[in-house]
Image (cartoon, rainbow, N blue to C red; front, side, top):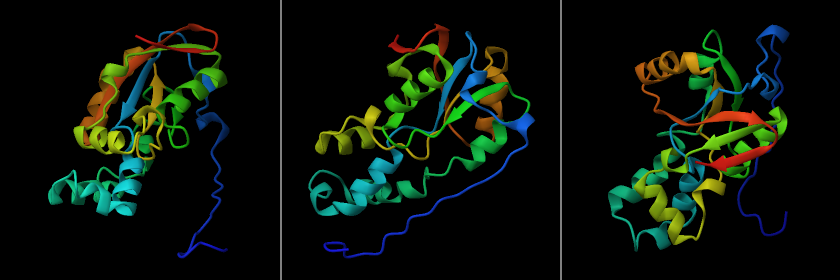
Length: 190
């Protein structure tokens, strides 16, 4: 393709799951808690720091630039480990990888798919100072930016402690960012 100077790989993955183990947004109920693992804008930071190091080196220390460039692997863009840890027996009612459109789009998509209203406290959404700085330098809203690596999920409130304990025991940061307050499509900032 004209103008493309590096290989691009496109893939499609297809998997199967037993019907009784399938977790869909239709399982979300009023009173469920909303959780997020790791932090938002993980992939955004990785892409920007690797594609524009010359611009960032004017604003970041060498240590911070290297840290940002390693976001692809630490905290990493896979959600497999945490999804696998919480999928069975902990009352998880929905899971979503906030990639395209970031956390804001993922919340909206869950609200539409479940026909439920979410009350989210944006002050509880995890975002590092390094991420805030890099996003601000490029006029990017972290709430709307590619956030592969974070896992957005809902679960029964009674299971909150068990979920948090399970993830933290496995060194996966997890944050309770809101809850489901009613029927109807909406996402409200607390």
